[in-house]
Image (tube, rainbow over the protein chains, first blue to last red):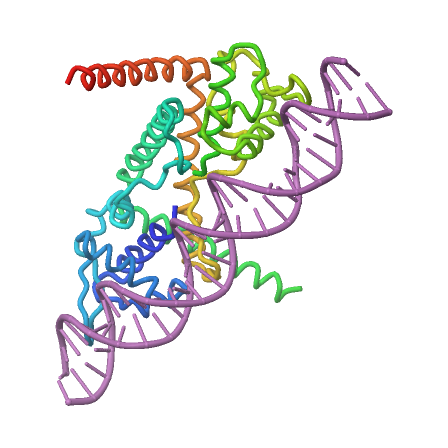
Length: 154
Length: 154
DNA sequence: TATTTTGTAACCAATACGGTTACAATCTGC
DNA sequence: GCAGATTGTAACCGTATTGGTTACAAAATA
């Protein structure tokens, strides 16, 4: 799995947290810690899939196209990877009967796994993800503060 | 997913069909249609995992270490990929809190999918796979014969 | 028109993979 | 012990994929 799915979740999460105003690719790139073009490539896919709305020019950027309660992780996944990700690579020269049949067999196992993943993703909304992430960030930050206090006390 | 899992299933399937006598990497490479070293790399992993027994020298090669009824696909999978295959690649420089937390979130989704795949694989034995593959090969060959007959008649 | 922002092409470095050659280690049989 | 067969593994090559960067056209605003 490439990192596009993770970036897509970041973008949708940023826009959910922002809750209204648009964010530019530059701003999200700073939040994520990468180049703006990396963000834009995924931004463009999410836009084409209808999950976000994007405008160019001054005051432009992206906003969520729908309520985050009405977007699930499967839609984000399929927006950035139209073809299955869980697939075996097949060697070039398999023209005999046995390898072809076994290859199809392995393909089916992978397709089943991909479908199970999609079902799992479908059951979680962006809003729910945002709640989970926020909660964990609070914990991570308070743990950091504790560590700083311990360090200052010593 | 790299092709090692598919090759592992080929090796175990070949040995099941053979049903006793050992097969060398050269023979299996011919059956699979690739170089013998490719086979040997996987052969070695299956040997270390205790799924096959391998001997060098004249009359050497590999045989199944157990009854194919007592080997399941999960064991084959874990023999060739000790670490999870379904994992997102993370960008190099993510030292901020949000990307780290979201990254862990995506990791957990992938771990869940990997575990689901393992459970699925665990439920099928090499013997059952062999039956499925044999049945499909028979179908494929009879379809081929029919095509040849149709071609000869025209 | 000038500025901002997206969209996308072109390219680079790093990584992973399948494949090949080569060779040491190990086993059998004479 | 010697010769031949077989595995085990390192080294290397070409290709494909990936994340990243630069560059620039297209589009939108003021």
